[in-house]
Amino acid sequence: MQDELKLQYWEEFNQLMKRRLEELEELKKLGINPYPYEFPVNAYSVEILKNFRDEDPPMNVSIAGRIMSIRRMGKATFSHIQDSKGKIQVYFKKDVLNDKYDILKLLDIGDIIGVKGEVFRTKTGEITVKVEDYQVLAKAIRPLPVVKEKIDEHGNRIVYDPFTDKEMRYRQRYVDLIVNPDVRQVFIKRAKIISTIREILDSHGFIEVETPILQPIYGGATARPFITHHNVLDMDLYLRIADELYLKRLIVGGFDGVYEIGKDFRNEGMDRMHNPEFTMLELYVAYKDYNWMMEFTENLIYNVNLRVNGTAKVKFGDNEIDLTPPWKRVPMFELLKQYTGENLEGKSEEELRAIARQLNVDVSSKIGVGKIIDEIFSELVQPNLIQPTFVIDYPVEMSPLAKRHRNNPRLVERFEVIICGMEVCNAFSELNDPIEQRLRFEEQVKLRSQGDEEAMTIDEDFIRALEYGMPPTAGLGIGIDRLVMILTNQRTIRDVILFPHMRPEK
Image 1: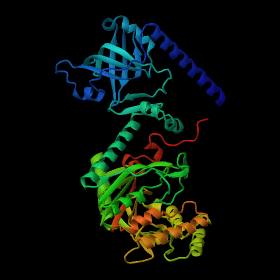
Image 2: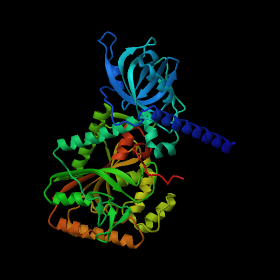
Image 3: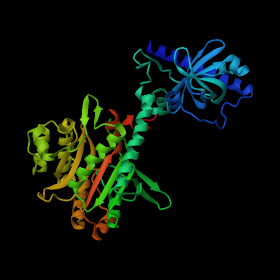
Image 4: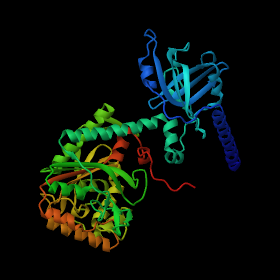
């Protein structure tokens, strides 16, 4: 039965395609270019609907957009066209357009047209453009998935047959944006979030910079890289997994505050919080520590949300998240004790493996102390942290680039921000002792030799930079995609990335 329905669908689809191709040829025979070069636009749907007043002088407009509905009524035709800001009704009349009216029979839902005319209000009260002239701007030969909607008596939009197939939506984002206007609003808000972050950082005097994406040595995080090859230099290069080591070189060079918003790449699994290509903000400020950075971070995210959403609180799933500072600050081992009942601080690798087994947390035989603790934390603690929480003071083994804690040498001055069970930020008082940094890198090399493919390698040039002297520095990384998820109430990272990675299409 299912195969028969699929066959019927494709037969109908092919008939629609055939009909549209015939319409295309008919337009050409009539001397109409179905793909012209330009059209003068002087207004948008939302502005017209907002500014129209019955008592005002006539408003003549020139608008363009995609046909989203069409109702043919003999010598009159009503249609809704959708531009980049919304929808508006347009009205075609035979005695106004004469022979050009008959060409409407060659147009379909999905076609893009430009119309010129006067704005009026219909008998049913809908603000409409009475078309005095129109032009075909792009004939769509592939039919859209038709989404039906209506406005109820309370003014609410009711959607029927929505385009919800996740696979198709992500793979054909262009269709998703056409038929699901709410999706477009998510990405407009994403752009606003990023521009607001820039405005705030620039207002503090920080300098936006660009660092290499292709790197001879990858570093700044624990992750597997993507590898490519440079033919002229005959050398392998890596897509960066983080910006950190290059940005700290700039602090050595004399900048007091630098940041970069850009793409990082990690050759790892994909799930609702991970995409192999993602957007990061990294910020480094000289003469500051992680205490200063905690206060700066909570105020940054609070103010971004306030400017973008106009509120201190956001809805994420069933939870209302209050971003008002100050946020809770809790040591990592304290949280581990609270949610596992085990004191993990100071435990050996063997002891941690035994505790992991007891807690039913599966850990690889190839990883060391730091990653075992991280696995236990990620599985048993992190999902419980819904309201914004600074998880502070990590074990040294987890943080090869962070400065030792001033009060406990077994820890480092590091924090992560967890919101809705997701890590959103990671920050350190940055390690600036070149001798200790080399020792930390060497410990990472040992882990690689044991089979940990995500462990770091030694970056000799970065150590050389530290040997020239780096001032006390606070560093911060914010996962922009996850922050956008929270501020737009999207449950998966694919809903905030325009073109997420997918398996090859069959």
